[in-house]
Length: 341
Length: 178
Image (cartoon, rainbow over all chains, first blue to last red; front, side, top):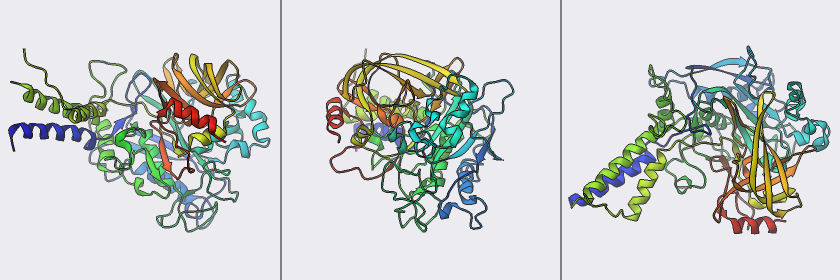
């Protein structure tokens, strides 16, 4: 092999390494600052109230939906458990159940803001007494703080679907942050859960909310609400993915990009932006997910941050992105040698 | 002074991929079930092409909401008038910002295609959150779902999943949706 071929191979390997070895990406604010929690111990609460449950997400004694709540807790624990304790000291602390349904951030002095996971029971267009004619849709959210309690979501604990296509949404996370520093102040996860009413599951706009399952047996796909011994949307996988966003990670690629298709090198990572029904593989972190977590919140080290629009830094100081820059520089170096006379 | 090398195209592409991998991205973290352009159009009262003229974010209790004024240049479905006032969740007010990951974001001066419907007495809402907003650049339309997560499923025959496509194809699919 000639020296020229070797240099070209080195350049190719470096470039490939940039997209494969360190795929994780950090979420940024509208000003370009990387998201992070300033504290290393982040409490979260779960509103355990659910109107209905698949059998696999329910409690055998029917006392509470213990399996569903456990699935969400496991989604948080996966990011702090034994597999990562050697490289990070981030703690996501289970602060217990909550009765709050309030998503968002109360900025009044002394206000208690919980990082909340809440199950919304069905679509507001179906659950509200008057459907789309219910007065809750006409509440002016800017009127008074008290008016917020009269919005459809807060009045009926439903997932707001002001338009029909909103029913394609399975989970949504609201993050309140400082756009200049990227510091997260509050994060809440809403899951659009089932109402308990029967019906088929063949629609992209399921009339009764999404049917979450918690089973390990994924051989049969559920065809209807309430069906047992089948899998549909795996709750724990979805929770684990959302918690990745909760701590400040983004997707490694975007759906429309050429590196994000069926043969994507990132397809196995928890933060990959596509999943299949019955997919339980995203319950477990991959090496790339761990690298992202441990780079932002290293054991005994300072939290990795990047300020908004700071041209001199080129982005986050020590992320997968940084290794991308290094790989690109290696590739350029190889090309530079090749260019010399 | 040294010579500048001509970079072979495949290697240039890999270099670009390397550099792109280094850039932190803003993201929308919501999970959607995959849906089609036609399906989104069928369930919209109006689909318009237009330009974002103003945005204004305000606190609404514990949430930040943004009013977006769109000047309509072409109505592909419905008769929405010359302007739409859209209400979308999320935005920035002073030192605090709120990202609602499924919600579309708008910039003043941006050319967009919006799938929308009325809700409440005054405002319009984007249909399908980020599924219902496309940014137009040249002859390409890119949905606001670029960073969303999808649960895959089969799309109806002849229809196309929400995704990047030419403006001409998007318009044709909207106008032919039944």
